[in-house]
Image (spheres, rainbow, N blue to C red):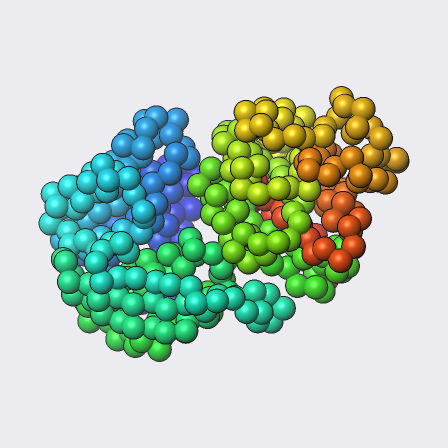
Length: 383
């Protein structure tokens, strides 16, 4: 028995000892062959498939179709399936065909009668939140109904609203099976949900602890093309005019080029500081900052975006003892810099944003949940 199987068995034993009513089990890589998939139909309330992306294609057959087949392995006979999406038509067809073979009723967050809208943004507890309406009137396979107006979500972005809608559909599947879940409970669950390291804005006090007073800092563990686009869209929605400085570290097995293109094509970036963070406590899967720089240079060239990076005379003019001294050369250009220290990288990005007065800026730490955890661990040590 491998380590993952042992950890899964320990988790299930812990659930049993604590007599949990409902356990939310996230399948590991793929789902079909994952240790968590030992759950039988009688023990499953519903399966949820949120998205199908290109991550882990090598391990799951090399295509979106094989990933879809692997993920559909969590569908159980006679148990409902909740689809998040959006999916490509042929991918959704694969999932619905598998559900049909398993006699599983399907509810999709994109079915007719199901909708969610963002009404506006506001600040709550020193962080932005979004006011949303979530309405479910499903009639296709399952008859589900709820109307939640002015729901305040601290997890912002269209993708997070869609996640909230998917979670609402899953809760309604439980209610359809006899669980006593009120509309108020669904609302409370959504409004009190947060996910560390995902579209997480640090407080002003946390920014001060990091030695970056007055900075607006967003940490997000995005590390795929799809999650990068979702993050860019969220930033555009919340701070459409703000200047941006990115601090990026990534694992070696990610699509660095596609990730860079999503950010570079989204909006003007003041700077991108490419750094390194241990992956799972080690160096084996860390992408060298110099390699990330090369990928960002390649992405900028393919998109026709002008950057300033080392090897250029303009770049050398900007630095004195590793501190930014002049930004006149950066007008209409993006600075690409490297540093093996994520702490120094954040200070560099902070200084770049501070050089232009009276223009708000956002410092975004992204590329890996590991660099996000490094930031949060630093806060824990400092507090």
